[in-house]
Length: 449
Image (cartoon, rainbow, N blue to C red; front, side, top):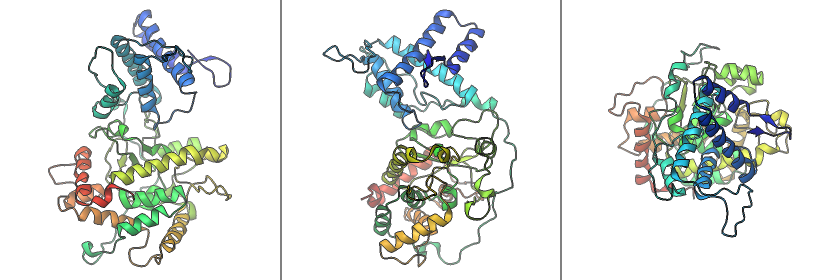
């Protein structure tokens, strides 16, 4: 198989090294040809059927699903025509199983060797049918499988080295008064504030703060690869399960070992920023470029990452929609040199400014917040109408549900000072399930309108 981005054919390095690796293990030439054939078919599918468009973490599951469907159902229409040029006849279930095994083997090798995310993150055994698996069969399997692909990586994981200053954070000063009586932003006004904001990035900030409880400074440290489909939950959080709710990762800006790929050599975000972008983590910067980081409870201690727990699936889906608009419509407009100069997802998204594509600053967010408040006839920084009021609103939403305990609220807020004493422990799967009570008791959370 050949990769031809420049018109000059060249062997695909990852496949070549994979085949040599299997050959050294004693694999037969017949099986090697089978594996090369499957990867070649996937390559042809992506180039011919999908037009060679860029593959992202968001699009990968549906592309792999489409590949399997095309293999089992064929690509030739009733008029014996195939616009893609593949002209694949349908294959049986045994061929499908072989393709799946081959892709899984190749994917696991690439994950261990290069840190790539798996091609088939949640596929396990599918039930056979007379005519092979259907589109619905495969899609259902993607949704219900709980298979964890990273178990074999544990022996490669070393204790994370200490880089950069200690930014575990000091304890926040205690607030006075009854926390249940603190001011908050009513949902109808919050909805108006968000939807009346033109900027995609600014809407993302407001949504993640109000319905994910994420501090503004934490958001400014989020990388582009930190927003993923919910299918990837068990890949990064082995105790969790796949879901339709988007996954937003909060990685330690110095010590995090998820880099958009798995860090297989112990490399941290601090090191990745230095060697790839010649940058330092934002908590170590000065003046306007700085974005702080408070200590938080990590949901995956090995990789030094946590995840957002959404109070509204509708607003979570809207956030993911905004992310896709940012990546597909706005990012391609950014000059390549600027786009490649940093990994952050929150940027200045106004193409009319000289800072277009540069990392968003806290001062930008504050000004955007003031404008947003005035658009709905509210005075900025009066009562609940300050940026931390978004997180206060998230906390109040949790408090309104009496079934959610104080210890669970602390888990949702990633408070580093607590060790959960409730019977659920730190199981993120159960914590996500508990949040579904919110939408049952507060119907206004079910829709963004």
